Amino acid sequence: MSTVRVRDLSYRYHAGVLALDGIDLEIGAGELVVLTGPTGCGKSTLLKCLNGIIPHESDGEMTGTVTIGGKDTRRVPLSELARSIGLLFQSPDEQIFFTRVFEEVAFGLENRQVEPGRIGGMVEEALARVGMSGHGPTATGALSGGQKQRVALAALLALRPGILVLDEPLSQLDPGGAQEVLAAVRALAEEGVTIVIVEHRLHEVAAWADRIVVMDAGRIVRDIAAADLEAEFGTFEKLGLRRPVAPSLTVTGLLRDREAEPARSRSTRPEAEDRRAEEAGGPPPITTVRNVTFSYERPPRFSLGRRRPAAVAALDDVSLSIYPGELTAILGHNGSGKSTLLHVMAGLLRPQAGQVRTAGYAGRRYDAFALAGTVGIVFQYPALMLTCDTVRTELAFGPANLRLGKAEVAARVDGVATAFGLEEFMERHPQTLSGGQRLRCASAAVFAMQPKLLLLDEPTSGQDARRLDQLLGTCKRYSREGNAVVFVTHDEEMAAKHADRIVVMDRGRKRVDIRNEWTFATKGSAHA
Image (cartoon, rainbow, N blue to C red; front, side, top):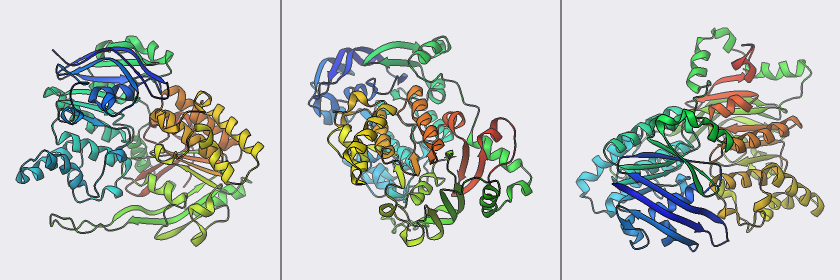
């Protein structure tokens, strides 16, 4: 018997955009189905139809039917649907409301009027399932993006829904964390929970799935049994999707290889790195990070009387030089300090020790306001950066505020719109775009300011392989023009394919810093 049944489902947003076009789909109890397809093909819209956000909280036009456990979602209140269907959004910040992990996971249980004596155990069980045991007292604001995703998922698991629909649950997770979460989700499927996962990282999720459903332009074009996946590789390539094959590069492998090197080869001081570049006649670094330490504030005492946790040390004596002409990838497990390092370089966080210098800015002058136009950053959740009414005005906002002439602003807008594939969306409101399209819009808006240092936090989220190649190819060309681009990612395959240099963070420290050719070819010398 089908738990989920979709019949001839179409949906058109109020702006006139047809997102779904005649969808037919059945999913049985205990099935784990992966939904994939090119960026903007309607995957997230379909998830919202499954849990009732569409049509109950949307002013678009829906035709066809969606039944959950035999009940038509049009005729069942959203509050009732929410009791049996859990939805994880693309951005966990959109569904995390409390300042402590424990309260966040406990909130739904309290609203279900679960006996207070049972809540603590249910919260700990849910946190353990997603690899977050012991994090109950932790401030949600001090979590990495991947840790927030785990907490948001734990809040759903604590409610024990019969159906889970997860929108890119791996996008902020390192590969090890992704496998932990997938194992927990697979265990739920074995217990009879129906699972629907939207995901681009097929090489990590395919082995756990029963079926892979492929969408394109609002339609289902393939419904593939997991056993038949290899025979369908041509379908993925035709649609610009990645083949579900594991990458050769892994963070664990890089750390293992680094530890196996002789200590002498790992002892070069950062200052020597700069001298080597200058002696070789190369340009000086655009940005230098020297002995930087940063800790998030010590959180207040936990409300249930548990021992107050120590301050979170996010960066520990980190030194790094960023050179013009380089596309640098920063890898590392969740919570290793990657995003914090980017925020320090962008002037959004002030280190407690050490110094950052970019284009003559340093010390107390090093802040995001002074660096505007010199350093640009795209956040993990780009929807938070989009504030204008159309994509066109969004792309023009930064250059106009740099007081450039109208002709120059228009030229830059046209250039980045073409480079990021946004031409057809120029008069759309940015928040009506898909998650991957919003990321491209935010990236293009920052690119339009032409900063000397461009920082991208998880730019691979929500992007199919074709768009990723386009984005990172644009980044590489931009760096070759005398700029520097640094991107944080868990996508090891794309880092190996595009980056000139790979840095690995581990527990707040820089553990690996190598040229890409060192990893895959010559095994030659590396940056310190």
